Length: 381
Image (cartoon, rainbow, N blue to C red; front, side, top):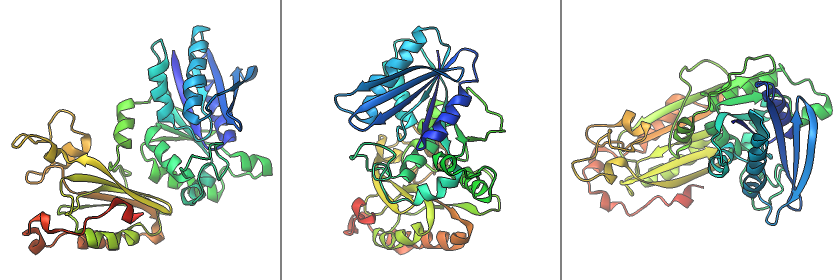
């Protein structure tokens, strides 16, 4: 059995993408799930573009994960037993593709191949989504009041998970008759998409679609907190990404003061920090639109191995540790990248500001235990 998972915030984009994906195999079926108010799940099943099943299910505890576990997975199992070779699963808006893939791996009784994880998106809306301060519930994308993710947080998470982004006019464009496709705003959104998801194939209505390119390990590596991926080629355009590395620990006070300026005007800030007040702790930092936060991700690899045994080839070492390994300080170090409008990002200013947060040579000679101004993770929000 082959499966393709489609995530989205826009039901119109999702349905357009799912319909196209349903044509990639000769014996395909398309399933669209929606979680409605009152914990009611609506399931629609299509074959060759024709609706042949429409059912509703009442969940005892309605939530997005319950919808996947109690209806999406059993439906995929049932359709596979009916002889369908390929099932396209259009997830409820706001359901992460990674969560669905995990539940499918866990819940299916028969082997399944995940062909693709696809995000369906209207690129005209992308910039607004990144900067929206409202939660998914407040914006009407989900029926769950406890869902505190913003649309930007959802999309950045999906960009790391999926291998393909299908671009279609959204529900707003269809309702208003707005011919968005190919407009200046459309092209600007596609350009931003290339900076935020440089690894993904961007597929429009007239573009070729490459099936069968989902890779679990690659998706997991991209989504590890603190990991930085940037476009291979820095092209001139309306958006740009700047990457910088700092080899010495950061002074906690200076970094706290600099963080708002580092993040100002950026669509996406991400990376990992080596802070002098917590030298053995790998701290991930992420800023999406108006929100910025830090989190501990455990010890650096160089601090988790037995004395004299820390090295880049240690079993379980992630790719970044291998590539960034330094003879004296191992994988420790600060790596930070920002993506935003070209006119809002001054690469030299960004790099100089981050460099100024590093300990000076004189400060490096002190014992790290003298730092009594620890950077509290909540302070940077």
